[in-house]
Image 1 (cartoon, one colour):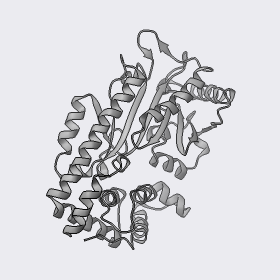
Image 2 (tube, rainbow, N blue to C red):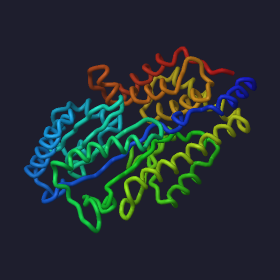
Image 3 (cartoon, one colour):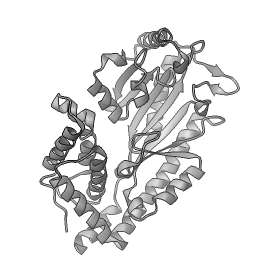
Image 4 (cartoon, rainbow, N blue to C red):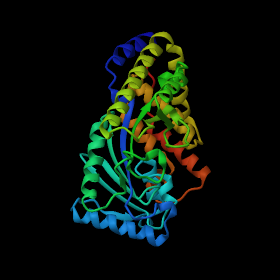
Length: 351
C-alpha cells in the first residue's frame, strides 16, 4: 500500500483543477416591464410573457427554441433538473412556464421562462471557467434585450421578484467536490469562512439541499451596488482558493492519514460492487469517494469523468428514461444498485 500512496502523492501534484471544480454556472434574472411577476400573475399573464420571449428569440434568429414546460414528459423534465439545467421551482409552475436550451461548444445555455422571474438566463462551463459561462449568458441576454423591455431602475438596476436579486440579477456559482476537506474535518471551517465573505454555500441540489457526496455550490450573495464583471471575478477567485485548499487537503490526507483514505475508498468500492439496494443519496456518498480515488489514480480502469457520468446516470430521471419505464422507490434502489455493480465490476483498488 505504501508504494501506491507514495505514487499517488506524486500524482496529486498534477491533479487538474477540474477534478475538484466540477462546473460553473452564471444566471441572469430578468423581468419584463409592465408585467406582473410570475407569483402575482394570472395564467393569461404568464402565457403573454411566454409569447413575448418566444417572439424575441425568433426575431434575433438565435437558433434557440422556446418550448412550454408541458411539452416535455415528466422523466425528461426530471433529467433536466438532475443536470442542473432547470429548477424544481419551474416544474411547479407549469402554466406559462417555458424552457429553451442550446449548446455552444458542447456546453449548454438555458432559459427558464416564468420561474420566480420572467427570465432566468443561464450559461454553463466546465471547471472554473466562469468568464466563459458569463459571456454565454450575457450574449443571450443582450440579444433578448433588443426586443424586450426589461424592468430596470436607474437607481437600483434590474428589478426582480426577490429583493436579494435586485441590481445585477446575477448569480455566479461554482460546483466543487470537497471530500478531502471533509475527511480531514476542516470543511465546516471553510464553509464558515465563505459565509463571512458573503458567499452562499449550498448542496448539490441548490437552495435548501444538503451537500450530499460533499459536493457544494458556492455563489455570490450580493447583487446590489456591484458590477456583473466584478461579481464573476470575485466568485471565481474565491472558489479558486477553495480548490487550492482542497488540493492541499488531498496531499495531506495521502501523506498524514493514508489508512483513513484507503479505508474510505475500499469500503465505498465494496458497497458499490455488492449492494442490493442503494438510494440516490447513499450512492452519491460512495461515488464521491470513488471520484476522489479516481482523481488520485488509486483505482484501476476508472477516471473522474467515468464517475461524473455515473453520478448523473444513477439518478431517478436518467435511470427511468434509460429503461423507458416508471419505477417505485424501492425498485429504483434495486435497479441503481445493480447498475452501479455492473459498471464498477472490473474496478480494483491499488494497494
